[in-house]
Image 1: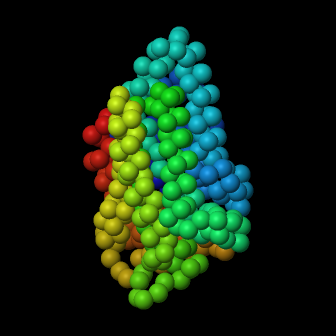
Image 2: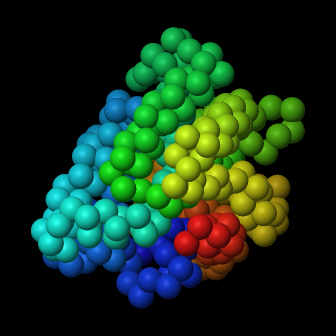
Image 3: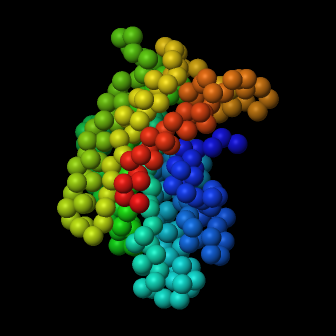
Length: 276
């Protein structure tokens, strides 16, 4: 099992067990936290549809409402549930899939013909702002918001789009991510100004990604994977993965290895703990 960075961060924050998913959480477990994450999901509802079923951020917010209803029943009333939610830490990292599984997949989506990269960053953060304000209205007061990492530096990106001018990454993907991050930083400032009883924290994922990548030397670190991948970019289940997994940045064409996730989680923790 590949342990993701947010799971390691939760451990550093003092959680004894993995945070249960919305689909599996039971009873009083919800008081310890709920994981609403969904692979390939995005800020936009259609993001990731080409890969099959996913739970968009809007649907995740609806699921959070269901959790709140259960919490009210457990704690006895709305006030106690609200007090509990006010103390919770919310970790939100959305947007990557809106680029890698939407904007930069023109054969499935029309967003790249509708919007320039700057316009897409604008409309994306406008929708994100509404969703985060909904989260606030549902009781969130401590929210860590992760910016996008170097989305053009994955094996999938470099193989699909190619690189130019000696770059080891797909610069146009990273440039688009930078536009989104700039808008997100401004959004965080605006949220903190408007919602003074809450704390929104911007996590600079690009800085963290840069330090993580530098921990794995080699010019081909963004193109090689620990396991042999199939056409989908995931590990071929019939092939043996690399023997030294700690030496690889990427597990498959999309996902980092546990070794790199540990570095990312520790970097994230140093920032997140300021609002706990």
